[in-house]
Length: 110
Image (spheres, rainbow, N blue to C red):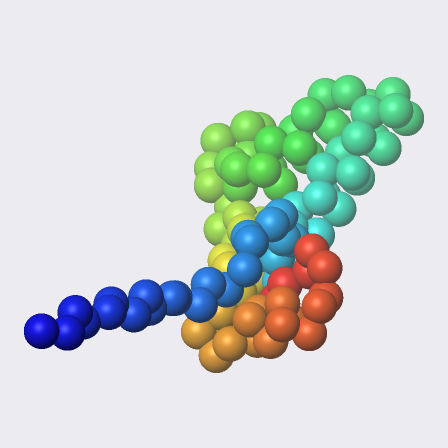
Protein backbone atom coordinates (compact mmCIF):
# COMPACT_ATOMS: atom_id res chain seq x y z
CA UNK A 1 0.00 0.00 0.00
CA UNK A 2 1.37 3.39 -1.00
CA UNK A 3 1.73 6.14 1.52
CA UNK A 4 0.13 9.47 0.80
CA UNK A 5 2.37 12.46 1.02
CA UNK A 6 1.00 15.58 2.58
CA UNK A 7 1.51 18.80 0.73
CA UNK A 8 2.15 21.87 2.76
CA UNK A 9 -0.02 24.88 2.04
CA UNK A 10 1.59 28.23 2.52
CA UNK A 11 -0.22 31.42 3.19
CA UNK A 12 0.87 34.62 1.58
CA UNK A 13 1.39 37.33 4.08
CA UNK A 14 1.16 41.00 3.29
CA UNK A 15 4.63 41.58 4.57
CA UNK A 16 6.05 43.07 7.70
CA UNK A 17 3.98 45.86 9.14
CA UNK A 18 6.14 48.86 9.89
CA UNK A 19 5.46 52.31 11.18
CA UNK A 20 3.21 54.37 8.92
CA UNK A 21 1.98 57.96 9.08
CA UNK A 22 -1.67 58.55 8.05
CA UNK A 23 -1.53 61.87 6.22
CA UNK A 24 -5.28 62.54 6.26
CA UNK A 25 -5.46 62.30 10.05
CA UNK A 26 -2.24 64.26 10.50
CA UNK A 27 -3.50 67.05 8.24
CA UNK A 28 -6.67 67.22 10.33
CA UNK A 29 -4.61 68.37 13.31
CA UNK A 30 -3.38 71.48 11.44
CA UNK A 31 -6.19 73.89 12.52
CA UNK A 32 -5.87 72.86 16.17
CA UNK A 33 -2.08 73.20 16.02
CA UNK A 34 -2.32 76.63 14.39
CA UNK A 35 -4.64 77.84 17.16
CA UNK A 36 -2.26 76.58 19.83
CA UNK A 37 0.74 78.13 18.06
CA UNK A 38 -1.14 81.44 18.03
CA UNK A 39 -1.67 81.09 21.77
CA UNK A 40 2.03 80.39 22.29
CA UNK A 41 2.98 83.49 20.29
CA UNK A 42 0.59 85.51 22.42
CA UNK A 43 2.24 84.17 25.58
CA UNK A 44 5.69 85.08 24.29
CA UNK A 45 4.43 88.61 23.61
CA UNK A 46 3.56 88.93 27.31
CA UNK A 47 -0.20 88.33 27.32
CA UNK A 48 -0.18 85.16 29.42
CA UNK A 49 -3.83 85.24 30.59
CA UNK A 50 -5.06 85.88 27.06
CA UNK A 51 -2.83 83.11 25.73
CA UNK A 52 -4.18 80.64 28.29
CA UNK A 53 -7.74 81.65 27.42
CA UNK A 54 -7.07 81.17 23.70
CA UNK A 55 -5.40 77.80 24.28
CA UNK A 56 -8.37 76.54 26.31
CA UNK A 57 -10.89 77.75 23.73
CA UNK A 58 -9.07 76.04 20.84
CA UNK A 59 -8.45 72.82 22.78
CA UNK A 60 -11.87 72.37 24.38
CA UNK A 61 -14.27 74.91 22.89
CA UNK A 62 -15.11 76.24 26.36
CA UNK A 63 -14.81 79.97 27.03
CA UNK A 64 -13.73 80.57 30.62
CA UNK A 65 -14.72 84.25 30.63
CA UNK A 66 -18.33 83.80 29.55
CA UNK A 67 -18.56 80.27 31.01
CA UNK A 68 -20.14 78.94 27.85
CA UNK A 69 -19.34 76.34 25.23
CA UNK A 70 -18.52 77.71 21.77
CA UNK A 71 -19.49 75.07 19.19
CA UNK A 72 -18.04 76.75 16.07
CA UNK A 73 -14.57 76.89 17.63
CA UNK A 74 -14.87 73.29 18.82
CA UNK A 75 -15.86 72.01 15.38
CA UNK A 76 -13.24 74.24 13.77
CA UNK A 77 -10.62 72.41 15.82
CA UNK A 78 -11.94 68.84 15.92
CA UNK A 79 -14.05 68.64 12.75
CA UNK A 80 -11.01 68.34 10.46
CA UNK A 81 -9.57 65.61 12.67
CA UNK A 82 -12.78 63.58 12.39
CA UNK A 83 -12.91 64.21 8.64
CA UNK A 84 -9.31 63.03 8.31
CA UNK A 85 -10.13 59.86 10.22
CA UNK A 86 -13.08 59.23 7.92
CA UNK A 87 -10.94 59.78 4.80
CA UNK A 88 -8.28 57.42 6.21
CA UNK A 89 -10.90 54.75 6.89
CA UNK A 90 -12.40 55.08 3.40
CA UNK A 91 -8.95 54.98 1.77
CA UNK A 92 -8.25 51.76 3.65
CA UNK A 93 -11.51 50.21 2.46
CA UNK A 94 -10.91 51.21 -1.16
CA UNK A 95 -7.35 49.88 -1.06
CA UNK A 96 -5.36 53.06 -1.55
CA UNK A 97 -3.08 52.35 1.40
CA UNK A 98 -2.37 48.82 0.20
CA UNK A 99 -1.52 50.19 -3.25
CA UNK A 100 0.88 52.68 -1.69
CA UNK A 101 2.49 49.90 0.27
CA UNK A 102 2.90 47.63 -2.73
CA UNK A 103 4.32 50.53 -4.75
CA UNK A 104 7.09 50.82 -2.19
CA UNK A 105 6.17 54.19 -0.70
CA UNK A 106 7.72 54.18 2.79
CA UNK A 107 5.91 55.47 5.90
CA UNK A 108 3.15 57.43 4.13
CA UNK A 109 -0.46 56.34 3.97
CA UNK A 110 -3.66 58.23 3.19
